[in-house]
Image (cartoon, rainbow, N blue to C red; front, side, top):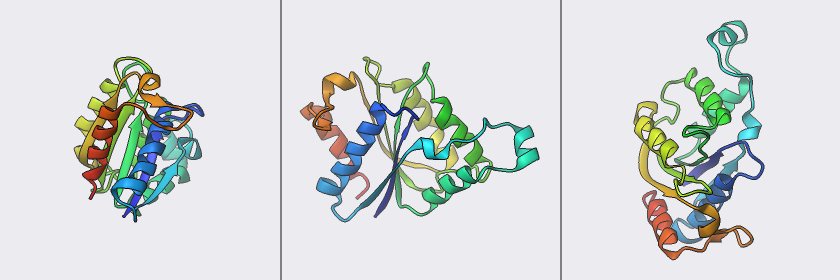
Length: 179
């Protein structure tokens, strides 16, 4: 099984990148040992802000095609969504908007695990709900989703792992839906 993992954030200090990285390691060490996980960085897909005028003038940026192609080559996608002002980060939304111009079914029928976390009690649940609600329209087969509130209370940053046993079990159960 090939899995694409990413944080929907372009922050170098992204807690969502820490979470999705841990989820990928957990998937290969405990859930599906023969899985191959590729962790990508949103910064590798930076491009101009989407507009119909830019698309008419210059076409679709190569980075959007590269992202679409990466999704096409895997069996599943794990995304951990950061929440900015109750919604997607601008970096993720821009990448998604450009990629949707290639094919509205951005996720190409792939199985998907959706995660989200934040430092506060909301756990980025607003953006997770929006992503989960719209995902089927964009070709995703959402297998599981998990919001983790109060990231720094529940995740040991130094060890790079969850310290909350209940959330650990929930994450393992979510990942096991990819079997």
